[in-house]
Length: 393
Image 1: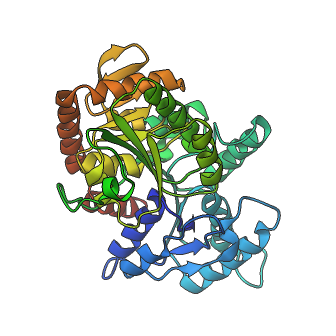
Image 2: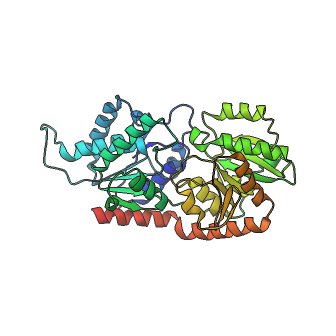
Image 3: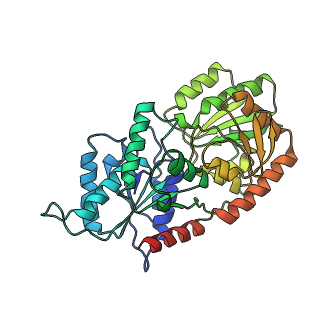
């Protein structure tokens, strides 16, 4: 179960799992909310993979008192499907899904309390909303809710060691023995495949490296930081052109600000269904998030052999590897450049360090490519999930 199949890694994650967990060992059903206006729908990805979700409209909203209806609808679906395992993904689906799963486990129609059903409840944190999303009061409420829900969860899955330390350690959600670390998986990306021809389409000057962000244009991605760094690069006439690939409710305001900053060195491309040709065009992948679980977009960039510069948040730190050298404003890790602050000057320094050194770009690319090939296949993801289900069955 997932809140909605919008653009992003979690949607692909649950589709890959549903596609792969099939008879004779499993029968899988995907339940999802509808994608609200202003966000791009990735239901086509489910269709392409032969997955036919059950859509529940109320799943797509933030938590509200009206979620009682959503819980009721899920309870009815569970009674119909009779699942042995209910596995929720993302915060909203995790809240209403585990509440409905609790009712399904303990309530029998016609009685207040019945003999508990044998059903296991699993929740995956792809990211979390425990900082940088909401104000202090709302954040505390969400932490309290997750602490309560942990009591109604048999196993909690996180996608990186860094995320485990944050959720179980810093925010004290659940017990350590409840947790399993299962990294994301991706399908192979063809190296040196077809390019997107973005340079020609957007008349990007020759002789400039392309540094691009790929993802949803939302507050947590902190794209103002990228705009400010691009402004510094323009003033210094740095040989780099920036791309923002994707869409979202902030696009109009970001484009307005880019125009105010006279960012002739930055282009908004909109959404592109095929990511591999975009990555084949990029020289540097840029991520400026305030908070991340383990960003699938970064894993895909690494799998495509694109060197990464990113803010040092969440699972990004695990992906980047061991820090081998510290410089003013950024760290050089074995597989990526990590920016230590939200200062655009520091981001500019990390970017230009890559721009000026082809050797560093090649080294990071090769290290990252080897790491992803070894650790982040869909086959490995499915194997880990199957093991988890068998362990709790």
